[in-house]
Image (cartoon, rainbow, N blue to C red; front, side):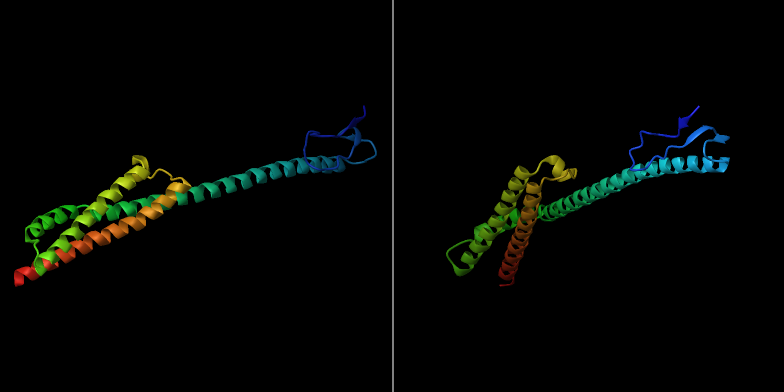
Length: 196
């Protein structure tokens, strides 16, 4: 009986399916040898494999794009986490100096009077108090802007919070300079008074 070779008609590839009329593998209508039959079947299998390969390539491309996107997101998250750690490292560096500020204020306060030296002590004391207040304000603002997971666990930040982190990094650097500067000036003033 006549049959038409249309193997895998559900292929979604743009191919031409050539109808081959044959009775069976050994009796091809219009062809005298089996090699031609095998060639035609091979072509159909090749087209089938080509379609499968294209499907595989599409999946591969999607996977590569997904992985690329994921890597960028991971890199972004890592950078945010690294920046957060940097900000917290500055905080951790200067926070212990709060006790030094308190001690210096305690030493300087009795020396404040109307004399020139007494006025210098007053300026130094106000610098120390302002540095202390700047640190307290920074910690409050920082705590209001970021939650525990963002600060300690590296939770991904929104675009707005990333901008806040940039701002807070600059602010904490200013606070650090205020703290270190006020301590150095106060200690230098006390040392000068001791020498006299």
